[in-house]
Image: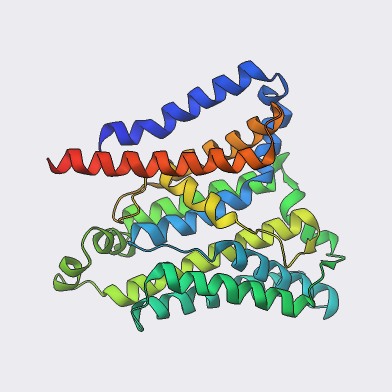
Length: 310
């Protein structure tokens, strides 16, 4: 990764922050910054999983639907079957992991392109969430579950603690473990990695399983924040997740990306949405700005690759 590509997310974040801070006094308040962190904890958690998948040369478009499915599974078990909160949460994570495993098997065993395989899972997981909940929101989540996203530990918001811990663990895994080296090697050149003895299919399968688990985790955070399991929640969230990872410097071609860059990408997306809301930009136009951000990030990535190859 070139120095310019590493610095771009940080520079962009600073400029974006300064712009919105100059346009809106509420934007630069500490309460607003705290709210941004709490409301976007799901984005950082899901983006950690997407970082692993994209580093391996894949992509997962089912994130939003898996989030909704995991949230519905957990809250349904808590409310309608009186399952203890910890066990219900584990079931939600397992639901995300199963969805990820199916994605991985479709990509590695059946050789279905990741775009198509995960697009299919997007519909399957959403349909499963709607079926399990009978198409209505499952209300009445226990207070203990809602504290998962709204509580504090030593006066530090729980979502902030979770996101820091998860980002740290993923960074360590990607930089200092054999699995992390395998993922980056596969993303750079899968055939060369295979010839070198890397278990390509097994490693890729695990990238999708982890991606599903992180999506499930993000779904639990959102369900806890809302106090319910909503089968229609998180629609389109996969676009924000992909945007955060790509804007953070990861390449959609695989093999290139950093956890620190993804964190900056998450903050960019979160600050952009929040700032646009505060200065009164219409929600419909906000989607256009996010789309422009994706195009700019991918265009810069392609330009950087051509320049380094020249």
